Amino acid sequence: MSAMSSVNIQIVTGDARPIFRQIVDGIRMEIACGNLIPGAKLPSVRGLALQLMINANTVAKAYAELTSQGLVEARQGLGLFVSEPRQLLSKEEQEKQLKEAVETFVGDVAYLDFSEAEIIGHVAASLSKLSAKKKTHEV
Image 1 (cartoon, helix red, strand yellow):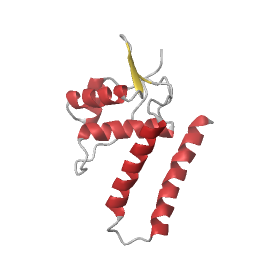
Image 2 (tube, rainbow, N blue to C red):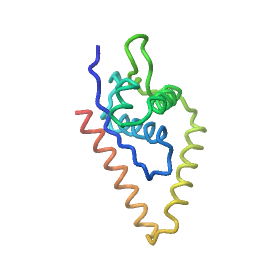
Image 3 (cartoon, rainbow, N blue to C red):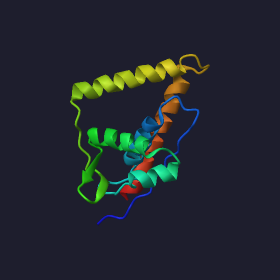
């Protein structure tokens, strides 16, 4: 049986995203960075709700979303575990989601006083940081 993994996410009250979305995004990032590896057991709904001091229904909604995305799987009587990596989306759907995310990002930063090169530099640095975290957890 796997030991329970800690989930290092924080809920930001001023964030425009709903709390359940912050949990989904936080756990997705933990998985992407390698902080939560395949087979890692997630905290119970109540446990994470207590940790984050939020309603358990909000955590349950986030876990349902993560399950539907194939990132976690429920094991009868054992709890929720990080799934083995697999791509559930077609290449076309991946392209569509990437395009939507980029358009949203560009819309968010277009009014800021940065050059295109500066923005690309920040994106590259952020992706490099994510890649470094992954490599740290793979060693």
